[in-house]
Length: 449
Image 1 (cartoon, rainbow, N blue to C red):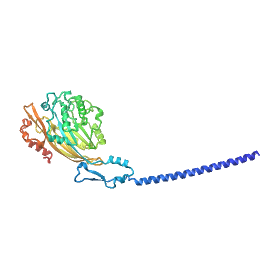
Image 2: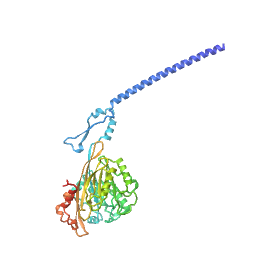
Image 3: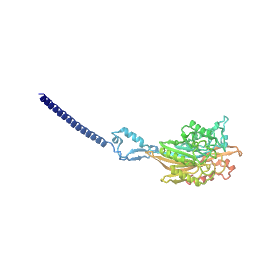
Image 4: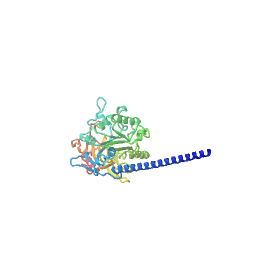
């Protein structure tokens, strides 16, 4: 009897196990079927949505249209394939973001650059007010002001420290210009960039470098300074200014500092520091759309380009310079186009001469003005449209060998012929004439008039 009950119980247990296994098997099959069906549905939905979205691999062609009544600023970029409301119906937010990132209104950028702003004592003494300040308001002719202020980017080489009365104004051989000289460049002429790496950068030591930078950055915070630095941290930042959405780097170097010690390695950019230069250009290429190299080099008072200048220009072009602006010889030198190994054509203005000075030998009162036009396309790519040069001339009178006055800078074409006879430069350089200056201008730029 006991064995029969155990056998019956065993049969019940076996039957229960079979039923449980069957239920589990059916559940697994149902789960698998549901999973496969759901996956198929999702795939169909993704395929359907993908069919409705535009393919990312198909480029969107653009067409620039301009009517006769439109100006350059009114050029409109439109799609030549589909209407925006049809093409981007599914993802308007994404489309707006992509359009902002990659498409913009094409722009032109005008650049003007001039040479050495060299404020001798004859200049600042002639404009000293009774209260100890300096009045530069009559220093520039209206047409010259308009030429410089109307440019989108204006670059001036500030030859000397400009700490003003804080360090005491001084002249050659250890310069320190009035701070009003900086104010005139910015407020009257619209200077956007001041290049400061010159052979006179250390005339007042570290105090002159830091004081000049401190004044500019405090009084004119929108102005980019380059070439000298108060701190190491500043010296390893790419000096970039943004113009109409384009980032333009201006890298500035000098051949030396007249034998004066440079306070710190970071204080002044030197042309023979190839390691620093390479690092600077690496940073600039990563961040900027266009790179300008402003260089203090060449032989003083020589109108001829030296072999060293040409060698340095080639090196700068290979590093990535798209435009080279030269200063230091105090007289204009030729400009030419060189070609880098990657095929880029790089204009080189070997010397822009003096912008403003009291130098008294021919032709040191003649200045060169670089003019460059850039084009920024709808994708932000910057290319050069063209370049040329114009010319300026400084007028002053001389009462005796030490008293100068009536300083005024003109565009050469506007230099009043009636002022030629009274020009102070004739005391030392009788060969000076407006026509002789114009002949030099035409030798550099045959198209100048």
